[in-house]
Every structure is written in structure tokens, then in C-alpha cells.
Amino acid sequence: MTTTPFQRFAIALASGTVLVAGLSACVPLVVGGAAAVGVGMVATDRRSSGAQLDDQGIELRAAARVREIANDNMYVSVTSYNRQVLLTGAVGSEADRRRVEDVVQRVDNVRSVVNELTIGQPSTFQERSNDLFISGKVKASLLDAKDIFANSFKVVTERGVVYLMGIATRRETDRATEITRGISGVQKVVRVVEVVSEAELASQAQRGGTGAPAPAPAPSSAPGTSSSSSRVPLPPMEPLPPAQPGGATATPVR
Image (cartoon, rainbow, N blue to C red; front, side, top):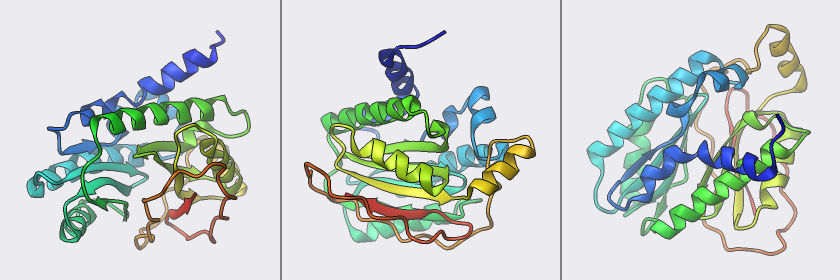
């Protein structure tokens, strides 16, 4: 059965409903989407089944750790992909920012943390609603693209800044970035991607799986800055830096 663009958008938007809890100002922490992974996604995800289960556990344990130190000025979203954690949201001070990163880094099975927390007021209900809408549009556009594997990427949006997490080749990463930059409302794209070669993907497919092998632990990558003003048209993309074995690269693209 074929689907219309509207239906594909609705499906992509529905996949982000786990974030709806974050639309309430009284909830200080949001867990990412790993806990919502279903049987179909396990079969098409490039992560191993073990990594997918670990990501669920990491998000839940990290959420509990952050809640223990949370205060009224802290709104944190925790998203884990292939055991690498992205922190987005806002905290009241640099000390809080470091404290959140420290407690998450010590969660079992976390390989590295990309800390994109900003210091200041948490996003408003309107901003979080808009972020959810943008994520839905990005997911739908990636699903519509015929030249990339959409399930290679997890999409996280914070105040118009879109984070692409995943396991992908350089070509796929650049293509997904190009698509995302064309979405209305996107202020900036930050790529938190484990870059693999076409040969690695082919080798994995021959072994009967779609996922890339889980790399060994690596130091935390330097995060990109998360503040940006809207620019129309957007300037050219920056190229990805050399791949870091066993770790994701975090590169801001305005």
C-alpha cells in the first residue's frame, strides 16, 4: 500500500510522541526515544540489538540520576544512540551543566557524552511544541528521500537546532544534513554521527544484519555550540572532520 506525503508525515510525527511529556513545564527531564523501539525498528536499525537495549537502559538510568540533582532551573533531555548520549535543554549555571554531564557519564555502558546544554531559561511550551513539529517534518523528509536509509538517523530538536544522531556513511550524513537544512524552522544542524564506510556496511549486510558493529569506548567528542540565529539562505555546509574510530563526530552546520 502506498502512502501519501501527509500520511508519511503523520507516521513520523507519531514516532516522536514519546517527547510529549516534555511539553509540560512541570516535568524537569525528558527521556529520548530509545524506549519506544519496537520489533520492526530492531530489524531495520543499524545498531545491534544489544546496543538498542543498552540505549533504553542508559536513558532510563540517566534520567533517574539527573532527577536526583534536578532543581527548578533545570530542564534536560537525555537521548542515547549506540551508547553515546546527547544532552539538550537548559540549566541555571555552568556548575549545573558540568554536574549533569558528570552524573550521566558515570551511567553504566555510556561511551561518551555530547553536552549541548545551554545556560538560561528553559524552552517554553510553544518552543517545545514547535520543536516536536520540526522533528516530525525532518523525519518525514528523510523517509521520503530515496538515496539514504532513514533509519540510520535519530532526530532531536531543541529550539530549532536539529541534532542528527546515527551510524551512517559520509555521503548519507551530508545528504541527511542537506535535507534537514531545507526544512522550514530549522536554525542549525548538528551532526552527532558515527561515520562508517560503505565497505563496513556491506560487510555487516553479508553477516545478515543492518547494523554497524559497536565500536570500542572512545573519549567524549567536543560538542558543537547550540546557540544560533536564523539565517536565510543558509551558508554552505562545513565538511565533516576526519572520522574518529569508535566515536561520533559532533559538528555544527549553520
